[in-house]
Figure 1: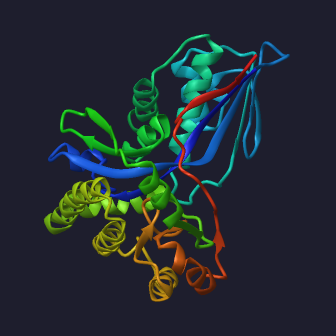
Figure 2 (figure 1 turned 30 degrees about the vertical axis):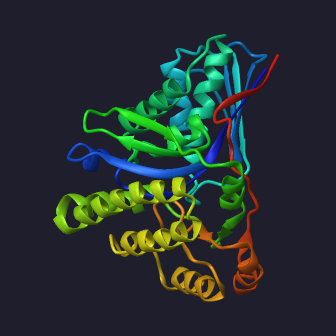
Length: 326
């Protein structure tokens, strides 16, 4: 039996520049962290050697790959040339459609589990690259590359996306006290709504391709991600929170699907209560509200957002890993 895990991520700046329609024209960059909330994949030899037994939100029993309905499972098994006689199950700490990169975390965990099942090692870059190929090239999902690399590497990273398709992952190194302060000052609140990531991202891609000003907005978001990296490394966390707010103002101008009146009210209430800045995690449209708030103001923010579910978390530093093998 193999138990594989990969963390979810919180993106701070540069989202949208990891999509090919942007970075093929101009290099993109994001600043993000992995959090200790995970997608887990369990792989086990199945008693019936002629069947694939797959368990997620539903259960599938198939004799051939073509019969498998779950696209990520089907194509990952095909990529690794896995024959029947295998059981794959998945669980996660947080549901999909909430802006934390759950699909890519699942893909990375699944690919790592399949390598381990075959008694093979894959590097973190290899896991991320293969997850990108699975989701973007094979399944044609309208997504970028940041989630796969964040899930594979873990930690707090500045990730660059080059026009030739190459990806550079640069860990952001802070002193232990500053890292602990940053970690404790980031809050996550579930807005209560899940959304179709494909629809939101497709609209953003269309906006970038059709409107040069929208492309320039993403360009400014990329510049801000460099600025925020430097702010963090200088240890100015209040300035980081202010930059997070500026980035949200840019992002929400891209399309009308990124935010709505209810989300705007939550965000303004949090700011009025003491949060310095924030944004919606991921593509937008719902999911988690990410806030930067000093600890002495957090109780007031929690009171202002009392109708929302807060998720406590810590940073993840391990990335994708095999948690159990026997």
